[in-house]
Length: 295
Image 1 (cartoon, rainbow, N blue to C red):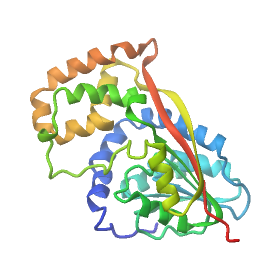
Image 2 (spheres, helix red, strand yellow):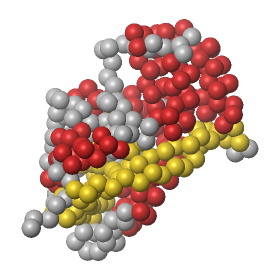
Image 3 (cartoon, rainbow, N blue to C red):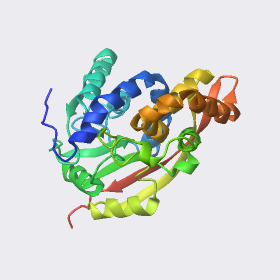
């Protein structure tokens, strides 16, 4: 398995994803794979990957590797390379692929913003893997360099938080208790955050500035299960997304107010209850843009 040294530019963000965020996401792996998988399936259906012997596809921000393995089944005789900045996610992905017998899938640890991604690839996919770059245009430009002329970047990114009550409702609750001044400034963070590419105008401008052409954005909404029980939903809301990040960074105050915050979350999540759990809308952009072909 190839490795590179963490870049000094993104060292703090990479440390966050390889430690505290990996641990958090691992606790809710089943919820995330099921919920986020809906957006991945919509992405693959709307913008299918190329197929056939010799095809090479890149999966950016491979996480637990489920999207990479799925791409491997779609490209037929081709190869899929999953990359992630966090070694723990690369290891988790490798275990998943081995268990699935996905022999045309492999994984590398790479900082997509600065590292050589090992192209040329015929296509690059990213299911929620592009929103956390400190310099998004630089990262998108590096992805474009890894693609063959005419190759396509396809990705899903979160739309505005107001249309994602699965995250926005807990955020509103937590912001009633936690202020910016309560958050520690010496802790590692996830980077710009999950909604950094929510603006269609900003995202299309970033893609064009990175050298892509004809960006297309399609809205896709799907219900996301936050937990089968109220306690699981509260735990998910307290750990994942902006609310979880705020509670982690303000852990001293959050610990002091834990009972009050938990009670407020319980009340706020009550309208989301169904017979089979607590459900809220998740809303994304399905995005595609192409590398120009020399004329």
